[in-house]
Image (cartoon, rainbow, N blue to C red):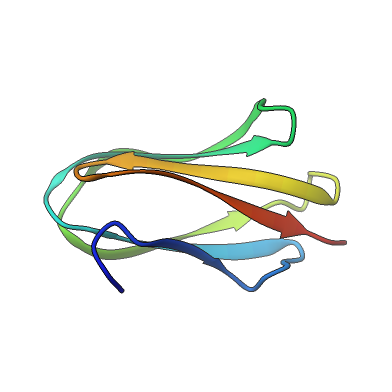
Length: 87
């Protein structure tokens, strides 16, 4: 996984997915999930982390099927990716 890489699996997911990412340096990280209208539906991370490869599980069982976006902000990374949940 290259620095700043951000990905989720499986694709599509039902109802959980694992989001993996790599940080090139230590720092404060936030990982948030948004619906297709841009409303925040979950905050998965809001903490300091060390450099390296990390992953977090997102459980969307209380959300409807559809397209969601997840945004990772941290040292050397500011990315938004799309994911699809099918029930």
